[in-house]
Image (cartoon, rainbow, N blue to C red; front, side, top):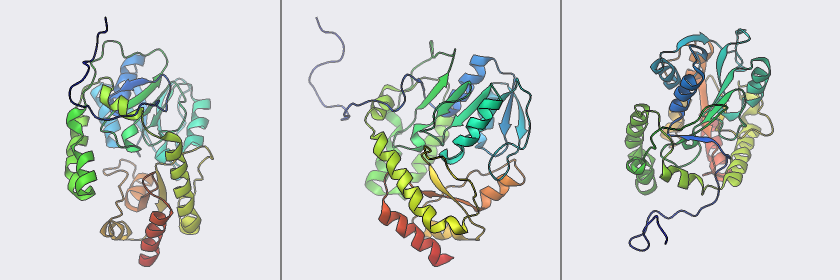
Length: 312
């Protein structure tokens, strides 16, 4: 006799199956909890972490009573420090376009941990890599972790049904109406204990057209770079296989971020409260991560360019 879900009754959220992008990952509830799980799983007592990164990373390491030693990066976002051969090192794949850097470090340091929260499509490398799908797609939470010898056995499964309001509000009322709810959701996720991915988030991630999303991001990035490359202080060139989170326009023009926001082009700041006195502070002030994601096409990129050149 069949057992399991009831037959009939009201409809659940309509999803259309498919497969997730990554095969056989550990499915977690947040990227910061992936890092906590890594620290626990490998018994890490000291971790080298970048000064230029999201402060949530530092908080996650502190919560595991793990000692941190900070390192700075240069303007190519490579570490300025040399590390002990057996050191545990965390490296951020910035904006999904620093995979070359991560590969170089993984070859040199066997205990590299790669933070791919901004690099969903970057292949795992080092002893562990973790990902944050909601930075690339419209899901409320969830994360992926690759780490040999670590399991999620015994962890509670998360539930996501109460985290959709900001996604729904943006759809019906626009980004500005949903933004305060988005901030509350992000704050609440920072307080979540280490859990596995919710059933609902996994179902959503099974239905995303990953290939077309990647192609749209690359095309939009190329369009912006063709117009801005000659005036962009950012010198890094992404690998051909990279799928960018955003286009890094580094421009020492006061007020440009605010001008774009006035035009309803929302530009995040990476990241406030930097510990890196040189690169981090400069990036915090002048790096404009321009949107290139799959929601947009050539007309949207041209609108962004028109607004930039009008102000410049």
